[in-house]
Length: 150
Image (cartoon, rainbow, N blue to C red; front, side):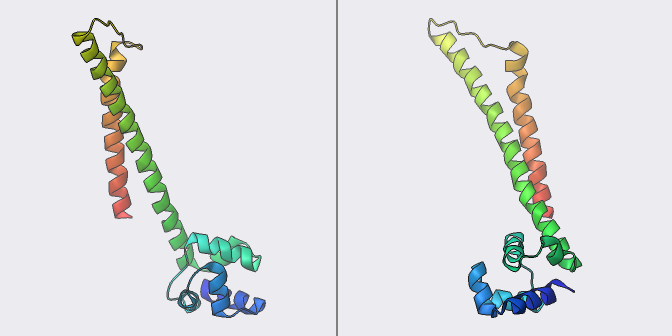
């Protein structure tokens, strides 16, 4: 049984109209109608709510409909890309902060009587910020492009 039929059968078992189900899911009655006619599919959040309302597993809702299963898989991929891109953006910002710290200490040492030293060795402070910024920038760009493709 495909998702649209399963949805209609489960709704009728509960004795609910499309309007009543729509109110429980916080969607329009037209959305329920489109789902039951196979014109569109709900997102994963709605599928989880349907599973809870009908007291059936998500597997029972998804396994029957290959097209819906593919949509859910595709939606989950789109959710993963922004999180990975954000991680690379944070990596870039950490590198930028390290660079600003290094420049700030160099300026303070040059124009004041302070003799501040950078802990961690010269290799880290010379190449660390650069590596973090380049790695973060490349990673962010790759996931930005990948997200556009999906």
